[in-house]
Image (tube, rainbow, N blue to C red; front, top):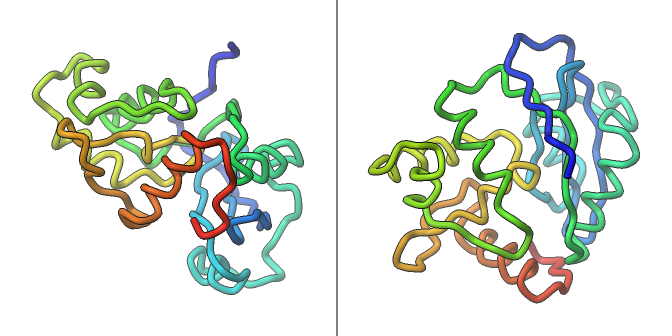
Length: 181
């Protein structure tokens, strides 16, 4: 499997795109360093534009490349997808970058606990800090923070809400699209 490029240096200008999936509209922010930000599905384009603080005229179609748009569409149809796009993590701390790299190694349809992720990065006992790092994840889905759960099997937290996290995990486990994510 190709190693994912995680760029940690300062980024350049941003380009924006919107992708329509079975679950709604997703926004992409891409720099010369890689994907900087991804939104979770919204019911309409305007919600994504508002989340990014941009206008329709700011959209650069295929900012993330047609391949990324296609992979996102397939992901929300419940298909196993491996995202290998470069990621612009210039705004993340070193600890966050370590957590994100570990989360990217969790396969489609599987979960790990916050504690397991903490051990994977060599910091056992830092499960709470791992959760906080994942809560700040600017690139959900590509950095699959929804695949990290509590040690007792509970959902833990998720920036898009617990119901969205449950639906994403159910979709991955069943292989069936879930348009209500």
